[in-house]
Image (cartoon, rainbow, N blue to C red; front, top):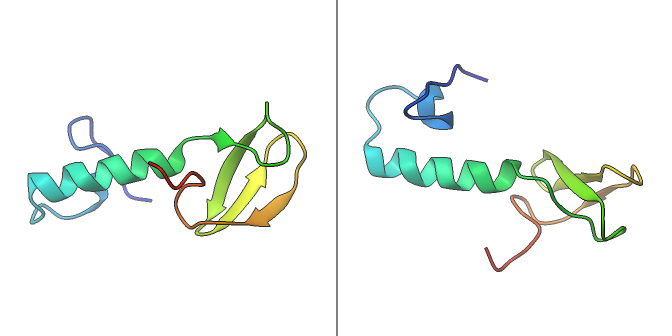
Length: 75
């Protein structure tokens, strides 16, 4: 993963030719997908995204397939 800067956060890995609107939208999506989300197996546990569509419950250790970026469809 490339280095990040304070001002442009995760979009800092791209070259300078990308505009501010694209960087802001990318940062929004990136922030949502990196958050810990509620586990479908254990209500108090969190789920971490391992790869696109692969999730792991931090409490039970179960690895399962699901949506690519975030589990809840209403975001």
